[in-house]
Amino acid sequence: MTCSVEGCDREVFNDVIPDSEKCILHCEKPVNSSHYENFPEERNAFYQAILDYVENNGIYSAEGEVESIHFRSIYFPRPDYKGENYLNVLDNIQEIHFDSCHFYSHYLKLKGKLFFQDCKFHDEWNLQNYEILDNVLYQNCIFCKAVSYDAKEEDHGKKLMIKY
Image (cartoon, helix red, strand yellow):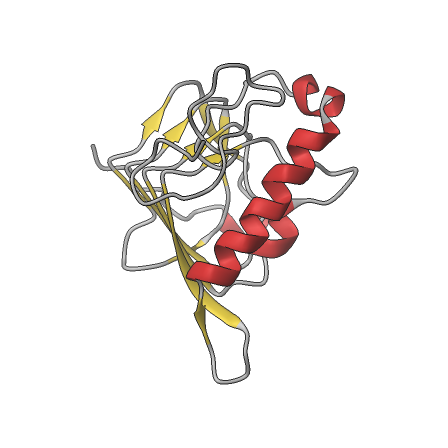
């Protein structure tokens, strides 16, 4: 059976998520961080799915490097810092547009230009000093828990503008 999300032809992932009608990219993830420590097959499946998604949807440079990508409705679990980490794949992309994505992490340590549009952050979120893509970083996003910013010394005196 294939994923119930329109336009997705990935197989349903119900090895760990019973009765799921969605693939590993589009299914809800648990907020509990220890969940992924107990299910390495789920972590590995997500990592492989992200690799495939980037390979099939990335915009490539003449040198064959992924320059930009637009993620739509992906549910990003907490990164796995012990094994294969999907952030290692994303960190090599220069521009990333997250559109209607869900995040279960406290932050994403990425170098490229980012844009979060209509995203939902399920756990506490720590604002990072991201480069901004398209003049805005967060547009119509929902933060379910506390949002914080750990200012570095070079950032003291700078203003953080939040429009809502």
